[in-house]
Length: 216
Image (cartoon, rainbow, N blue to C red; front, top):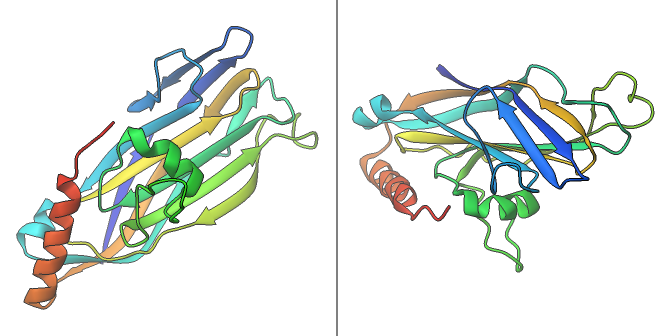
C-alpha cells in the first residue's frame, strides 16, 4: 500500500466590484482564467503525481481511497453576508484543459445535452465540489461555513504514468479580500500486476487520454 500526497498553496483574491477588477496573489501555481485583474472570478492550479516508476514495472494502480485535507475554512475581510467561495478538487487519469473548466464547474462529470463533459465517471479518480458561504451568524468571525459537499469520483484503477490533480476556486462578486488556504491531496493505492490483455488495454486507453489535444 502506497500513500501519495500533493500540496496546493494559499490563494488570496481581492474583489473590487466598483472598478470591475479582481486581483490575486498566491504561494505558487495559480492561474486566473482570463487576463490578470479582469472580471473573471475563477482560478485554477494544475499538478500531477508521477507514476512512471510503477508504469516501468508494468503495474496498474488500484485505489483504496482518496481525500483532500484542508488547512482551514475559506475566509473574507471585510466579511459580508452573501460572500461565496467554491472549490472543486479533482484527481483524474487525463489532463483537464483550462478551456473546459467552465463546463466542469457546471456539470462535473455528469453528461448533459447542453455541454460536452470534460471528464467521464471512469476517468475521474476523485472529485469533490464544495460551496462555502458567509452569513449573518458567522460574519463576525470572518470564516465561511460549508453549504454543500458533493462527491463525484469513481476510484477506477489506472495504468497511466500520471494522475492529474486540478484545483478550481471561484469567489463571489462582493467586495472583499478572500483567502483560500492550503490543502493536501491524498491517494492510498496498491500497485499490482493484471492479466496481460487487461493491462495492455488499460495502458492503451491511458495513452489515448494523454494524447488528446490540450485546447486551453
